[in-house]
Amino acid sequence: MKKVLIITYYWPPAGGSGVQRWLKFTKYLPKYDWKPIVYTPKNPYFEVKDKALLEDVPFEAEIWKTAIWEPYTLKDKLFGKGERSQSAGVISNKKSLKNKVLNWVRGNIFIPDPKVYWVKPSVKVLLKKIKEEGIEQIVTTGPPHSMHLIGLGLKKVMPNLKWIADFRDPWSELDLFDEFHLSNSSREKHKDLEKEVLQTADIVLTVSETWVEDLKRLGGGRVELITNGYDAADFELKPKTNDKFIIGHYGLLNHLRNPKNFWKALADLCEKNTDFNDKLEIHFSGNIDGEVLAEIEAYPQLKEKVKLLGYISHAQVLQQYNEADVLLLLLFNSKSGVGNYPGKIFEYFAAQKPILIFGPEGSDTQRLISDSQTGSYFSYEEQNIENEILNLFNVRSKLVSSDISRFSRENLAGELSDLLNKL
Image (cartoon, rainbow, N blue to C red):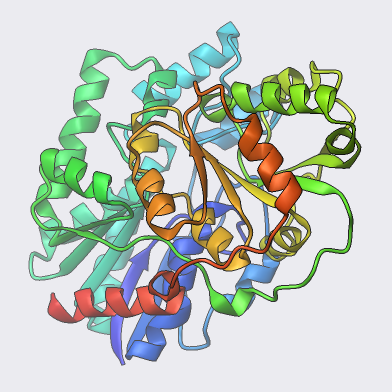
């Protein structure tokens, strides 16, 4: 089998969305005659574990690990782990002086991110192992975008090495950058490093049409699209076992994706419609911003209807899809949201449940939902949404999407294999 080295920070037993894309590529690449070799930290800093994901690692895969030192461990010793509400490196968005200072340090001192101290040691280790193993193709995936600096360091020493730089999220144009209070010089450093990566990689890979164009504009030469997807092997569709009207959101919910108009519409409907009021439940799992939760529960009609599931494994999330009537999808209410296909949208397709989406106008997700006729899309400012919610409540139908096989993880791994073969 041909060998490809995949350099990723997120790897099982880490849980969360950052793991899924390259875990699933790794799972299916051997079907296309590629042996995946994964390089990942031995002692990463992550907030959630999902050991069941290790079952997806194929026996053909080889895993290399080395130790990493991260400043977050020092931060925890000095200040404690707090509410464990980090998101894309943001310590917390609460407006305290401590958090402002910590976020300033995160954005201005650790460029591009606190994993940067793993770059030089990794380049040194991998140069030797790549030669020993006869590896000709590598992949780096970010965030954290320090992974791309490892690829850059390898490419500078071994220019014949073929390199795919995979951007699961933007770098310099990520909206959360505003939380870091970047100085002009720090912002320029981020942009310069990003441009060097984009211009040096043989292929820049990303997950949406808008981000393809954005990365070309920022300096990318050959920029290709492979979206996220769903793994058909994960899904066992079962009928609901309850008579409640459950609206479910599973994953991070923060201030940048908070549909205030939706919470108000739900509260108003509870006030007007006794049956709706009796049946409604709102299920959340994962990292929920305390201020957003307080805002929802400030409506007396909703306070008792919120059910917090805490952190649940990916397998448990898939089970929750079966119990829900409507799956809620919240994009960043910002420029990043325009090009964001959240990984869960493809799983929502496979779950065959109606999708209710909030996001910016003209987004890639809005076009995808319209083309596939799989849900209803609203802006965060739109007010006339009660009728659509009531329709979903009254109909409660199973939704069969148009052909979604092109988004299966197995088929997407085939697309990746084609790219690797052509390098």
